[in-house]
Each structure stands twice: as C-alpha cells, then as structure tokens.
Amino acid sequence: MKKLKIILVIGLFTMAIFACTSNFEEVNTNPNTTNLGDIKASGMFEPLLYNGAKLWVNYSHFWNNELIQFTAFTGGSTRQEHRYFISDGNWESVWSAYNRYGNNVSHMYDLSVDQQDRSLEAIALTLKVMYMSNITDMFGDIPYAEAYTARKIGGTTKPKFDSQKEVYQQMFADLEAANNIYATNPTFIKTSLDGMYGGSMLKWQQFNNSQYLRLLMRVSGRSEMNVGAKMTEILNSPTKYPIFTSNADNATVIFSGNDPYRNQFAETNESTFTSSGRKLTEQLIKMTVISDVNGNQTYQDPRLGIIGKKNTSTATNPNNVWKGTIAGVAETNQSDADRGTSWLNAAVLARAESPTTYMDFAEVQFILAEAALNGFITGGATKAEEYYENALKASVEKWAEFGTFSEIPVTVTESDVTTFIASDLASWDSNTNKKELIGNQKYLALFWIGMEAYHEYRRTGYPVLTIGEGAVFNDRILPTRFAYPTTTIATNNANAQIALDRMGGSNNMKTPVWWSKQAIDSGI
Image 1 (cartoon, helix red, strand yellow):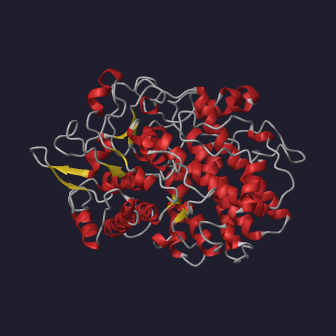
Image 2 (cartoon, helix red, strand yellow):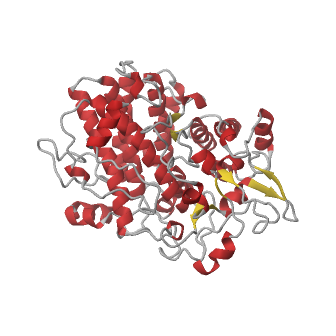
Image 3 (cartoon, one colour):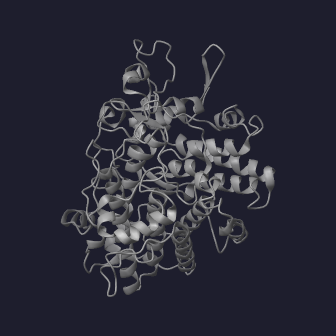
C-alpha cells in the first residue's frame, strides 16, 4: 500500500486517475516525451493494472455507453457524445490516454527484459496488446513498430504509422511471444501486487489467449488473415493455448474499497453518476424487456435490475415501467423523452469495491458461437447453440453476484437463468437470424467492458440502431473512427498523412477502419 501511494504521489506515471465530472479528460501530454527513469519493472505493474482498470471503466461510461446507446447524457449540453458532438480536444484526450498506457507498459517490458523478470515480460506484452488494440480500433492505422522509441538510442519522435493489418499482425506476434513465456511458468515475485490473478501465470496465459481470440474475431471479415486456422489451432491445443473456461478465469481487477484501491466512481453520488445526466436508452430497454400487445411489460432480462434502476416516481412514471430515453434525441424533444426514464444502478456500479473486468468468459463463448456458425471452427449450428447458451449463462451469473448490492436486492436463481435462455429475448430456436441473435446478446453482455461493444458494432452491424434526429454533429452518422488529433497531425504530419491516404479517407469520423463491416462491404 505504502509503495503504491508513493508511486502515485511522486508521479512516476503521468497517468491520470480520471475524475467523474464534466472535466474527466486527462491533461494532454505528448506520450513520446514520457521519461519514467530507472525503476524496477515491478514498481510499474500495480499502477498499470489498477489505473488501467479505472481508464477502462471510465471510457466505458463516458464513451462506449453513449456511442453505442446503452445510455444518453441528456442532463444538459456539457456532454453530447450520443449526438456525436466530439471535438479535437476529445480526440486528443483519448489518443493521449491510451498512448500513455501503451508507452508505460512498453517501458515496463523493456525494464523486465533488462532485469530478467520473465513474468512481467509476458504480462507487459499481454497488457500492451490490450491497450494498443484499443488505439488502433479507435483510430485505424497507428504507430506500432516504432512507437515509444524516442527514449532509446536510434529511436524516433516521429514514428511511422503501420497499416491496421500490420498492427494486428504485430499484436498477434506479441501474444504468441507472451504465450511462450507463460508456458515456462516464470515466478511472479510479489503476488500481492497482482489484484487480478494473484501472480498466477496460468490465469494470465488464459487471459492472453482469450484476448487472442477476441482480436482474431475482430479481423475475421478479412479472409487474408486466415483466422479459422488459428482459432482451430488454439482450440485443439488447450495445453499450449489455455483460454477462459469459466467465470473464475475472468480478467477482473478487484478493488478493496480502501484508498487508492477504489473504483473509479467511488467518490460520485447517484446524481452525478447517472440520474442527473446519463439515462438508460430505449434501445437497451427494448432489448431487455418483453411487452404484450397492450404495452404491459411481462418479462425482463434478469440482468436489467442489476445494471439499471427503474424510475419509481408516480408523477413521471405512473405505470411503473422500464422506460429509456432516446439516444440522439433532439434538444427540443429532450424533456419529453426523459420523463420517467430509468438510469444506471449506482449502488452496484459505483461502489468503492466494484470491480472492473477487462474480458470475461461470456465473451469467449460468444466468439466461439460465432466462429462455429460461420465455419471458422468445427461444430456448425449445433455447437454454435451450445457456445451461445454457455455465454448467456455466464453473463447472467456474472452479474447475479452483484444483485445483493442493489438498493432492492436482486436474486437470480438457476431457474431464472434457464427461463431467460428460453425466453423470446434470447431463445436460439425463436430467433431465425442466428448471427443477429449472437450479435445482439454479445452487445448486451459487453456492457461495462471498455469500448468493446462499440468495436463489435462496427464489425458486425449489430444491434440495428436507430440514429436519433438530434445526432446532427456527424451528419447523423455514428462515428466510424476517431480522428487523429491536430497535435499529432502537426508534429508527425508526413506519417499521419500516409496513413490517412492509405485508409482512403479524410481525417474525420466517417472513414471506416480496415476490419469494419463498412470497409469490407465497400471493398476498401
């Protein structure tokens, strides 16, 4: 504890612990100038893990949920991401934040190699890919091979931008290298530092290879990546490539609730966290609630009462129903759209001890369900259904653990899980479009997991979203990428321009990234 506080206080890291206010964006700095000095690799690990978890869930709350219509900030005009009002300052904020983590984890890797700490060498590669995959998935082509080399002899402050295909190939190589190191079962020197896996190399290896599956699926629309062969190799070699096998393997960072091990939103109240601004949307409600012909709500997804809180005001919600606001609603209609709407369950999500999940078992099972259905792996529709139902069960059971923290405790039984899987919301047999069914339910299961739902929407086109009339800031086009910030264009113009020319578009939020459904369908 004392060591972590010292590291945080003296600022060995430039990472910001993001505040939950309208000024949540971190101070913009040039990640290539970061100089962390000569320290132990182990001294960098814990802040990377915990502060990275805070960034992960903070961006889920402020960016992912708004773009992908889990929530909509309708409490004023200070934040209008659900209307696609995203400025250069926002691009700079996101670019700098992820790059700081990429820079710091790359530095931890270099130190671990010098200090012959094989456990942290492998973990650094796993975390590097996690951060770097988000940068490329948000922006497209990015520096990878030459990134963060300014502090090295022969390095550069103007790294070339690799194509997204090249970035993915390099990330896959890093995941392979990490997997090989984990296989030697190196010793994690101080297990108390690891608030996710307690220093277990097997658990970290499972996370590494589960992330491998995530990224293979991300580029599965590109036939030249031959993802089916690699997925098959991973599944056929469980000893060489262990992956998540249950919720016990989830990559979840545990917070004790004691400073500084506190959830990102521990200092917020319900009003600032959600009810005065971020409301649940009608998109989320329609996917989690069944209504009869008279509009009576007859059944709900068992997760809804855990992640959400119904507005029980008899004045604004006299029928006591789950109601969502309209994502992208025009400002003139905002008041009517907000009346009686539900909001996030702060008692569950903003607890000081509320954990952050980087990736879970449910996501792996959804990946395998889609892979089987598409013929990337064996089993066809029969096996796809099995994986799909495993995914639903895992997701519901994960959230069920937190039902007790709700103001009105929520209990989810095994029977409830069975009923949900058989309901019209989720039934394999009742839904003819299996790809859409998998995509829709995976979207819901990715709630509160970083930017993953946004990435997946651009890859699959699911769920089918209705763009609000007020989403005028990007010509009513849900952002396909974030633009390179002006500071990057100014300081590394030649390389950035090569990347933009290669991506075939201007530096805006309408150019599709290489792996996206839009790019593939357009033949880009």
